[in-house]
Image (cartoon, rainbow, N blue to C red):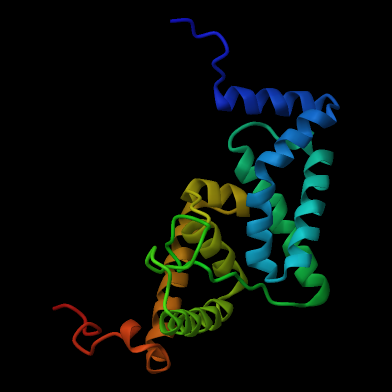
Length: 213
């Protein structure tokens, strides 16, 4: 069987990057189309505002195009998301706003789409319970330090590996692990502290909250 026409996705991406480095706007636009949803999602979870997220994603792509010569290989996604993250942080510092994250997913969710609910259409009661839970989670995540919040978003929601998060944020893998661990514990403890405000189906039993011997 002929293998003509088979393209390795990584080779295809590298070819696009090389062409973009040599001034091809078409090649760079192809990269934009490939990563625009991911860039917007990260920006939205940091900015918690649709218009701001769209602006930050656009600014990040402009910056990425201008800085293509600084890309030396490795994960292009991580390199790009680092620019998105830094663009958002610069904007937040400018207006002295705190980052926030969309809470369509619980920390640890693997995909971007949809709340953690059964596939069947939720009843009004289930929708109300999910809204209450999301509000409680939002308060807990917003209470995290900026560095912990972005790592939680990139790792547990965006699904980046420890190494990719480290490259994106510009810190060591060990620091990623320690900050992520603290962030997870903080969110879990926060939710336990306010569990009386949560729908009954999400509350921990007293026996469940006791540490194992």
